[in-house]
Figure 1 (cartoon, rainbow, N blue to C red):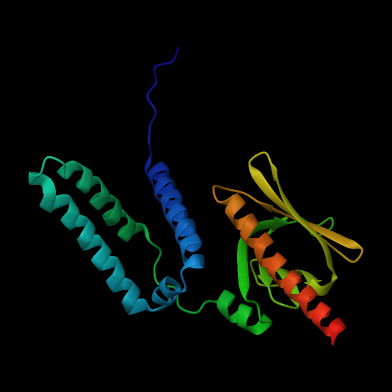
Figure 2 (tube, helix red, strand yellow):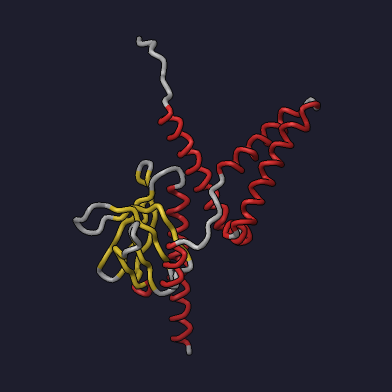
Length: 213
């Protein structure tokens, strides 16, 4: 049996740090989706920088101050987590191209991370821009690969496929499949599913109201 030690190069370390940042970034995205106040804070560059500094100082204080206590090591662990989080949190996000595109399309929700294959073309990672009237699947250049009229949606479901999660959508005589990969695949797939269900049900309620009137 080989006893050759595993060597960690600087590239490996950089890759590990990048994966950690991506993990914290994805986790932060999910938290932001549930907290509009945190989203507004994240869009303000000065306030967000101050928040990160305060979080780091609070974490450092939890590491240093309680060391004289018997249970100080427990508090120190939490302090270290806060301190590391303040470093790994993504920088403030001012208005991006995605924000401007969402405003242009009237999209209330944008979900990334899905992979879509248009016909015989190569598969591409897309973002789903979901509005009350349409669902757009845009590529990395924010060019539309697919546009769906929400009023025509007749089928929607999510299911697991080994480590991936699939979002299947049917409308008129067409159908499409979006594959979500990675640690938060299920969360992103369910977020897209819930958002589309919300607009489809809203349209159905509007139609029923119009029919009654």
